[in-house]
Image (cartoon, rainbow, N blue to C red; front, side):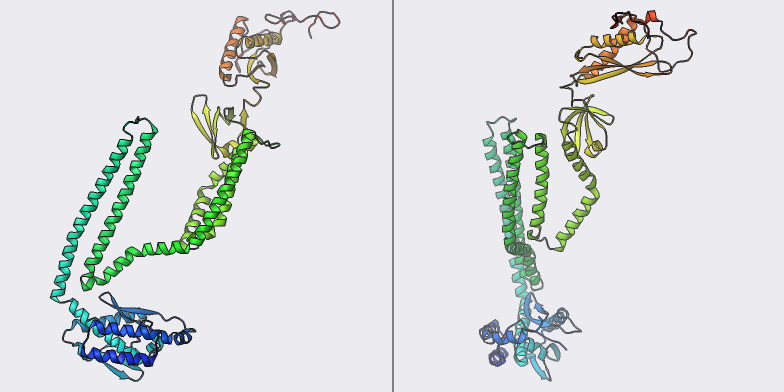
Length: 577
């Protein structure tokens, strides 16, 4: 059994029955669109009289799911479902029976009739049932069952007449002619749109070329004009595309509407094209309070960031002095505070972001969080290490440092990496986390005030007096340019080895960048001085020993260039220790 619902008119049964009886009497004599129109006007006029009754009766009921019965793109009425048959399936069955009756021209419209039964009214076409209306349908619509059945009968007759009229040879010919004319208009419209787009693009290009004709091509004005040209061209292409899409949609909608079988697609096409815009518009309207809050929040936090930036800029310039706060920390501290403020602003603004509560937005947030947790741990570690290096003051821009096995000048410090220029003029990027875990040797820290101490070692045999070795090393240091004489160079006796004595010459210099050239000169002078005085620099190890012992007799203790020391405090000549 069918259960039929009609589209929500709320009116009294007695008044409706009177109106529908009049309409149905005229409908049996003549089926025309005017009868249905008069019927709908009466229904709409009588509807408010029972509005309160309908609200009171339906106030405590759940909303009933209904589905439309659509024939050739026109909604005739809506039907409700039952437990064993959904509303959509029932609407489809009614449509199929109705179109089958309409397609059978042997069935006269006048043969449609209503057969009353116990608790149900059936609309028959000959001996075929088209629709069954039960008391539940009438109660849902708040009308009498007989009145509801009569209204459905009028709509069905009108639909059958329209169905057959739209499928006549004359109607199809008219539709084809209109479609052909529309196709011709479409072609003309597309040609006009593309012609206008080309002319506009050429006019813009000519205008911009005239503006920059007298400007040097190497200047920024030419580059700026070229960018404006690209932007305007992109805007014109976008407008042209929108115009073409709009024209094509109008064309397709008009052509599909000319034929009964595609008339429904015409409505769906416009719905498909306009639904995104409708959704966007309604979404914008609904989101206006949140957008206003986000706008105010943006300007508040932007103003706060500007104040904080001005404060730390003054600290960096020295206008504001903070105790135990290095001015070089001002910019990194501002960046850290800015990140914290931005994160706090995002947390505050999140509930007011349009679509933030949707499942898609939450899914994207979870996805980004997973990506950050998987790939951002090392980056975050480098950022933290970068701040730690800044506040530790391990080095500054321009310092020469040794990090691990790498020696170079610091040219830039970033949150992720530190850039060095090596002695071979290479750029080296070292992750900050690696620097934090390595030993950093800064050659510039005390070079300006106390001088950097350069040192080198030599191994000399036991048969050479240490006084002579020290004198030769100091003489070689004094010959080297770029070394300071105050404090004077000094020698340390580092080790009494198995085959040689290890001496270390220490010299002062403030020329940190030339330290390796100074080392080269110092090593050359050491070789020259030791060759001049016939003293052998020992290799790390050798095979065999001479027969005589490796000792220095007292008379050879002060061989040149070593100087004999003066008398002791009691006036006696120095003796061998």
